[in-house]
Image 1 (cartoon, rainbow, N blue to C red):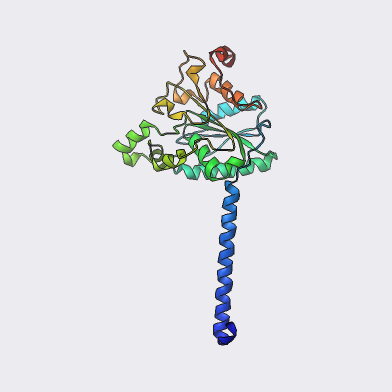
Image 2 (image 1 turned 135 degrees about the vertical axis):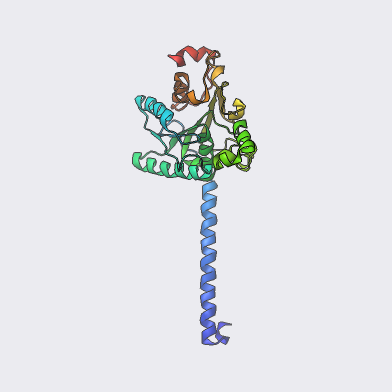
Length: 268
């Protein structure tokens, strides 16, 4: 067929064919990479790796630095992630930041996996990373502290009364937001890491507090262990019982659900 064409048209046809084949090859490679990313190969649960701590809305690292210091005392390599901008932007962008830190941490330590602790909105960021950025194959444990997995009425109120003062992350934390609806569709704790959610019944920022409950995870309300303990949302990363809980859940043993019998031990 090409032989019947003039030399100029033949050259044009060959160029079109080459470009078409290149596009098909590129699409095929992209599809294969997506399929590989969707294939989950869980990491070994008995080999704890470095710990990455993801701040909440606003990106403040102060409280998490204390928690990271406590983990370092126990011999863990612990790093607090610095979020993009002022920590109030797109939570998906923050998940990309976490992904870059994970890559750097694995290269620095030679570890095969990481443990992630997400405080408040940082827990949602960790889940986005697991779902969308290959974290299912790199995370061993994901511990969330007071995370609004199903949104918080505070963000909803802000979005209704002062939408100009409710940045993108705030909008994404409104109950039943597009982001949360998609994140919670199907399996809330998909294959890969083990998920542990810790929260306080005294939470005044995540409302209702049990918005932190995650289907399929080890769910722990602080007051289910120490009923008389009063812990605000802001105190979660520094409360000694919570610190002890985080260390316990990030250990080599399988995640567990302590009871009131463990309150004195975790408080000491």
